[in-house]
Length: 396
Image 1: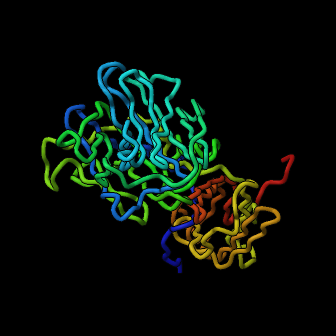
Image 2: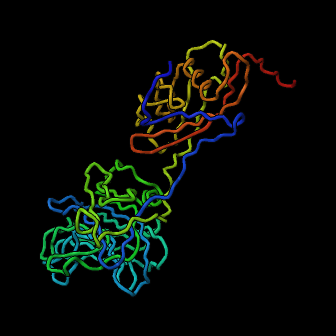
Image 3: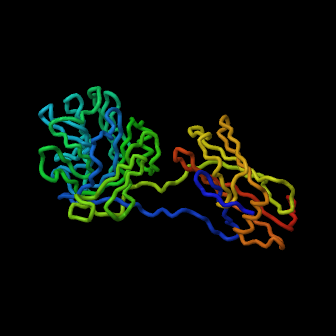
């Protein structure tokens, strides 16, 4: 009897292309985002008291689409308990904004010093940009669309979160400070998607990856992740375990300060798996042949940890659980064994074949998987499935 199991790490999906022409592919609907009106819209994240924002090395990123030209107004992207100031005792936090001149400004407050970095690029109206701020010890960096745009040397030491302008507020789409304009200012006129905060420095390679790849909330160092895919309601959920959810606008119910849910145009990919090589044995599966097991060898690229797989959740065709798995780290290989009769039952069921008749079909076997770090992968092999048919000899 086929065993029921829940897919949580790796599954083998079987589709037939020669018989039916069907290919099972995940649809990739556009995600959601939040559109801010430039007047009073914002998302309020939990206050930074007690401190939950990183104080030392960090990475903050967002996809941003500006609805107005440079030179019209300041556009606040992220206010991370931040307030630069000409008065040293008032400086706190850090943040990202597009200033009046059009540059992206990344500011930090360290030891009562304003640490300011401006982008060389001036983002234009009507284009999506992936903007990333990185603090790495005494280095401050801005990446735009996966490329290092500018960097500078900054002071060492933790971010200041206590000062004259400290209001503990953490905002998306506006800036606030103690003693500032009631309700805040520098309201963003545009759309934001995929906001992330890491408590570590991401490498240039990692930044290029996250630019197009959605997170799942469990990535190393990810302390805040808002993908805005709710599409409705008053809450923008933090998908990390920290659950620092954001409230749209000024009240738990709808009000004039709410940004609008919108279809995202950010070029985030579907959570497409990494392509891997697989090999199914036997190559020809005959209902009448002997044997106990069907095996699948899955080979991952060298950069991935094959020991990080949830072996207990390996399935075949969403129906047959793996009876046993073996890991070979030296060859980057996972070998999964499945009960032969369960595989036969699954193929007959999926392909609507008559076990009392005769058939010979070629079946594409698509392998999809996931490591515990969230990395998904897939591969395809082709086997022959037959019953009451003699295979032709080569040359006939």
